[in-house]
Each structure stands twice: as C-alpha cells, then as structure tokens.
Image 1 (cartoon, rainbow, N blue to C red):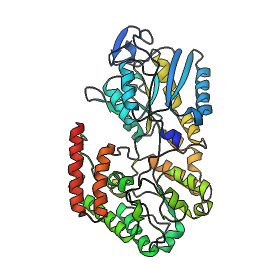
Image 2 (cartoon, one colour):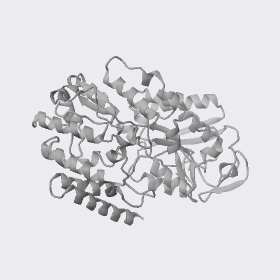
Image 3 (tube, helix red, strand yellow):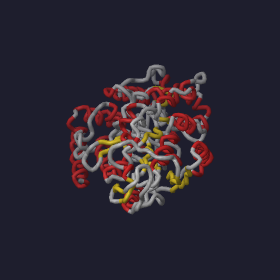
Image 4 (cartoon, rainbow, N blue to C red):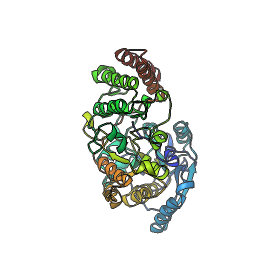
Length: 457
C-alpha cells in the first residue's frame, strides 16, 4: 500500500493561486523587456545567463492551507529572511485550495498574476513550465542544486514548450513508505517480525500465513487494490505506462497477472475483510483495534497509533517496504517551490525560494510536532532528528528508516489519473470476486485504461 497522505493541512499544499506578481513588468536585474508566457517581464528573467540584481523589493509568497497550523513557523522564516535582506519584503498569502487549482493557476498565469514564489505539485509545474511561466532555476543560479538529494533534484525537471527538460522547481518536502505491523499477530502466524519480506509476493505469502492462522479472528490487510495500484507495480519494476505515458503496458508483463491471481487468492482465503473490497478506508482503525496485522505504509500512521492506541503501539514494529525488483524504495514526487518568470523582483523571489528550501529551514519544519514529513536536502536527512533512534520506539525507528531510504529512493513513481486508476482497480476487484479470471481482468484493465488515455490525448 502506498501512503501518499500527510497531515490534513499539509496534504493540501498542492496549490497555487494567486494574486500578486503582475504583468507589464520592467526593471529588475538586467533592465529592458522580454516576455514569459505572453507576459512582459524583465529580460534577465528569461533566456541564458545567471540572474543578477539586488535583493530588494516586495514579493508575494503563496501556500495553501498552512496558516492555521504553521503560521508561527513560516512567519519566522519570513522575518529572518527580511532581517538578512533589509530591502526585501515578503507578503505571505494562503489559499484554501480545491481540486481545480492547476486549472485556476494556469488561468492566473495567463492573466500575468502569478505570485513571485509559489508552491506547486508535479502536474501544476508541468503545465506552468510548458507555458513558460516559471524561472529556469538551473540557469538562473548554476549552484542551486547543491543542497538537494540527487534523485529529488532530478525529479525537479519539467519540459518546456520545445520538449527540453529544465529545472523550474526546487524540491521542498516529501513523504515515505515503510511496513508497519503488529508483532504479536505475526508471531501467532509463525512469521518472524525481525525479518520483513523483501518482495511483494513474499509479503503476500505472509498474508496467506496470517489468513490460515487467524481463521477470521484478524486479518492481514485491507482488500481494496486502490491502495496498491500502481505502487506495487512500481516496486516490482512493472511498467504501468509506456515511456510517453500515452498507453498502458502493464498487461505485457506476466507478473501483473500473477499479482492479480495472488490478490484473488488472498481475498478468497480470508486474508482481507470481505467488506473492505470497495471500501476507501485504509487500515488505520482496524489496526488500532488489533484486528489487522499490517497497518498503513505512511510514517505518520505510526504516530497516529502511538497517540490513539498505546496498547497496540506497544506491539508495533516497523520495517522496510519490500524493495523487490526495483532494488530501492520508490518515493513519490515531492512538493516543489517555484519562482514566477513574471516576478517584478526575481532576485528577491529566487533568494527567498532558496532560503525557504535550504537544509536549515527544511529540517526545522520537519521537526514541527504537528507534521510528519521528510526533507529533500542531504544535510537534513543526516540530522540527528532523523538518525537518532530512541530505544525501540517505532516512531523514531520509522523516521530513520525513511530518511535513510530517501537518500537513494527512486522518484519516478507512476502517476495515474483517477479515471485510469479506477478502471484498473475495477477489473482487479472483479477478479478478486471470482467474476473474471486474473488473465482476463488484466487484459480488460489494459483495454479500458488505453481507451481513457486515448480520450485524454
């Protein structure tokens, strides 16, 4: 199961808005006018050449749904930046966000009203980069990559209008994946909690042992495959989509059918609650009640158990999510910080963006007790906060485990639209119910996925 969920407020940081930065801009680092996405900008903001100019002027910094929980932290970051640069002022605005944020943000960009510094996710960064609205950070500051874990910096590239990959974002924060399990329930099934499986099918074999030992008194995991597709495929190094993302190819790998056959077998044998096949619930509640052996793969879940079920937490251990054929952890794309190419004060905006995402500030935010997130800078991941384990405490063990794996994690996680994912999941559910053979379900899933991908262009 892939955990992509952070705390409620942080999960909303996938947006942009905005109000501020303006078109018809001139002046700044190099003088003269040019254009970015149809907006008039200072010529120093675009093209080749390092960005120069004084760190002076007023900029707008955009987040989504952060002020309520993290106002003190970000106000402190802004204050310290302004103290270091007396001529700079940062106006922080916080948008509540909704599921149309990419569409809205592109519309704002077309109106030349992007903020100077904006938090973006991968889909939004893709759209803004292609349209030319974001600063090419790798060109404007050749040293900008130094603090970041190489794999995360690599993930920060998006294609411009010509198809050339450029760095228009700075990696900001990410999540992690691990196994969380009830040691007592594994012991009862004859599974050694100290030796987590190294493959997905090895994990499934443990699920089967639990089903046979528990006989319905407890379960291994939840049934809905939506938590596992395409996460398991990624970890098994099964290609879900073609290189250009325009067609589904998972049915071409025989291991996909084997995976579906395993899921159908486990569901039939009682490794999963029958009523969880179409439920959107993750294992949180049942795990906290001692009724599910394996919990959520999200590190924040470990803290949830610690706070809400001390008796189960005392039986909880964490381990490495199976590396399987991929050979390393698969991490989703992080959240990013970008600088608008339309910024009137680009030197200020770039300086603030780099300050916000540097190791010191990333580490400080990740230490906030209200959030369980992980940094994208090498120095942050080496900080004692992540590396020092307190005895056998599962939560501190989880932090170290995820921090270590993020240093080499693969960030090329497959991203499926909800429609395509649901089409695949629906066919797997039919196989799990015995209404289709695994082979037919996989074939039909690929056909339906391709129909949707073709419609999307």
